[in-house]
Image (cartoon, rainbow, N blue to C red; front, side, top):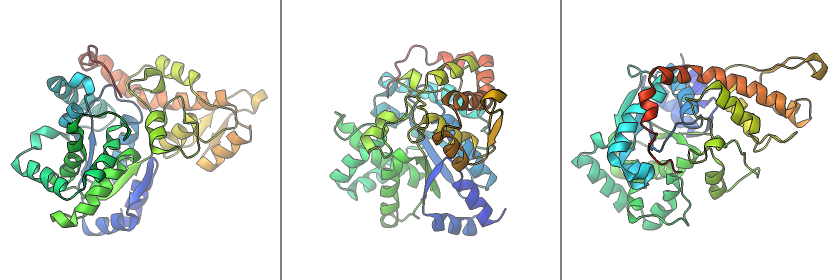
Length: 354
């Protein structure tokens, strides 16, 4: 596979931004197997915006020869007060339910490195945290706490100021070539790129995936950062999210109730899921009676958007098509947890928060 083919793979949906595109091409020219990383808080059930979207992109990275690492950020989760602030429970779920979600999504341990973050936190790591902190202003760090899924105006503990510095230090400690996240983590990646030369590291390529909206959708074409935090899929609002382990019946029930206004494409979660999860690999097939236009396939986002905005495609037909695709994509995960219920049971007694 040549550099241009690798670049196209990495740039496929749900990728929204590469910083920089030229840098990624140069990386592929100089390294056959660049190192990648994505980190996750262990905050509850894994939804399609976290699990499925990430798994699809990591499969692209694997096909391009990249060596992926998934980091389970136990200390970050603890700082952010998730899962009741129970560090041992956080670690249990990280190595249990959370890891097995990604394995069930087709990312086995022989292809992806799974790392519990605190296990790499040695003296050199904490020196890096201090070095990052020394070279960034307090104002910059406070702006970066939105990466925690919180607004700057939210009341947060003083430990939150460590969160961005630790995330940047993770990137440097792992000697990462490609730092991968949703667009909500962009600020910390820009901080890492800015500080890298000062601290003796190469600037990481920042790979940012589109944030999938919750089933309630967004209400503005260009929502601001606070509105994006509120609108994205949330574990604390179960009916706003499709969890990767759910049954066909539960997925279709949620989609039936989802926001999907007629002729409106912006902020429409069904359009977003179709574009970022389905059309990236295959056409979206809509099955409907002849009296309503018969079966039809859409191969591109432009075709789908034109048909929907013009009224040629009814909301229920779009919901049925997207629901069928998601059920098929997630069926192996549901089956996996039917065989391994102990991992789901790990979350039965914990409070799920944003």
